[in-house]
Image (cartoon, rainbow, N blue to C red; front, side, top):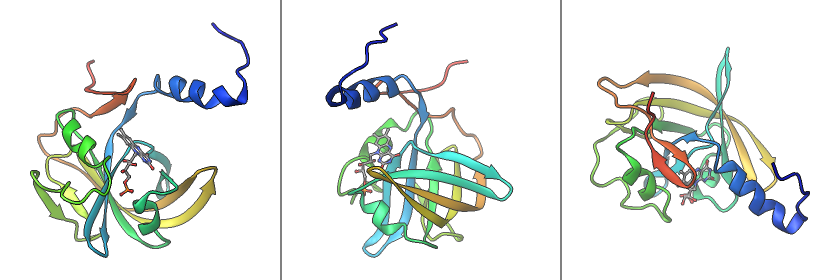
Length: 168
Ligand SMILES: Cc1cc2nc3c(=O)[nH]c(=O)nc-3n(C[C@H](O)[C@H](O)[C@H](O)COP(=O)(O)O)c2cc1C
């Protein structure tokens, strides 16, 4: 174990490298933007509370989605399947237009946002609170509806700069 204290200039690099060892599930967050459906890849999803059902997602400053998710805004989290790394890559690019092509989407009656039919599950949300934290905004949201999808595959996981499935 290397216990050397890094200088502040290198701390960010050490932290980034360390967090690569922390696997996260991959989602596409969708919302109805002024120019049509909008979406971005996000893996910072955290379940905060069951009663009432509440979740949190952390959005970087400069993200268009962060600007769209004002208080009371509605959005949907699509939990990606292990076969959907290409969709994750598409929604990680800016500006994200055209990213909806080539996959089957429905519009959620609850949020008006796009639901990926072949995702493993989706969660409809309403923004209840925004907290500024360093260079990110923590978006806390009330869960309005949640559903797993029939015939779902295993989850898509981001680990060590790569996409993987889960093997048990
Ligand atoms: C696997 C993966 C996970 C990501 N997770 C997040 C995240 O949780 N929060 C975030 O702000 N950006 C995240 N990003 C980066 C955004 O997807 C990317 O910056 C996107 O272009 C933002 O789109 P927007 O400007 O339309 O919001 C992630 C990217 C990848 C590839």
